[in-house]
Image (cartoon, rainbow over all chains, first blue to last red; front, side, top):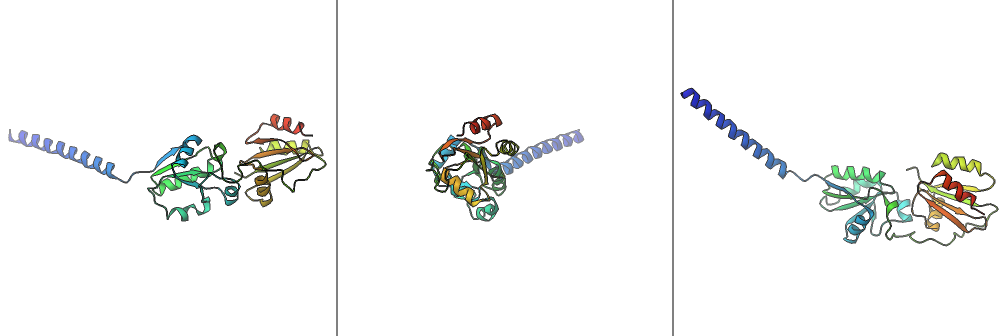
Length: 161
Length: 74
């Protein structure tokens, strides 16, 4: 009988130890630093975020940024993102974009790994943005240096991206 | 787009002048793009021989659409 009683107590102890372990592990899991919350957003949602004053990060080249960018966006090209972002508050929400979403996807992955908690990604890029743009948002007059020629001309503006 | 543009460039040689700019690297292209108010890449601007803009195509554009726009140039 005694052996049986001891065995029962040992089982109870083991059971409660198991329950305690689950509680501790659960608590540790819940209290760990929040992992990055990355949300792909539509242009309309991005426009709302811009209106709300979210920090807007344009990871394109300075040349592309100069041509036109989302109002209020700061230009942080990919090659300087790491050094610039190291000085930012990881708790501050960011809206990240590039031309078509390829570069910004890399930027978002990096920023998430650095502990930025809330990242909004305009994953289809500025090409889908229909709101106002700073610079270049109006159809310009015919460029002064484009003179009528002997034949029609097609201009292609592109990048390697 | 490059194979399409290369093919069309060859086909329309002598009839339409192709000016192709990599706006990441070419400052003249960046300035022209700014002057035309083109916001996206790729953008194609079709200009008649009198200097007036006939059309523009933004983004990936089919070869048939490119031909239609090229054929409409005067």
